[in-house]
Image 1: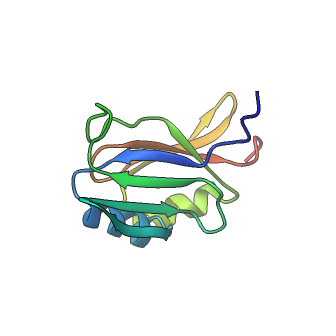
Image 2: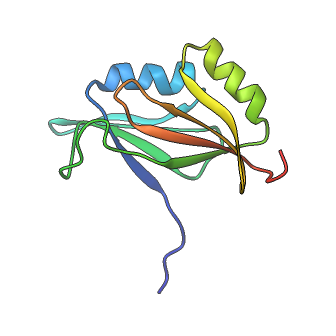
Amino acid sequence: MSIKGIKLITVPVSDQDAAKQFYVEQLGFEVSQDSQMGPMRWLEVAPKGSPVSFALLPSVLGVPVGGLKGVQLFTDDLDGDCESLRAAGVKVDGPNARPWGRDANFSDPDGNGFVLMSAHADQ
């Protein structure tokens, strides 16, 4: 098998403009693509420098809006990022101590759930 990695995760959203605002203004992601493809708008965002992006698309492939759960994002500063998210108006559960390390949970405005993990097990 020659699979090299993950490039894209589709995040089902109800309003692409509202989702773009959340991911860019509240999470600090960058827009990597925003273009019209026939009748469909293709919108991708990603953390700065990340090879993996999120496609913010209307419900596709039977995945309901808000149906994405458990995507893990990593940070070197869990406490600081939780504070920044809260200051940006994001409801955050955590940081939480787990047997495998520390994490925090949050959702986008459509209810898609994410886990923010400390990149270091001891932090």
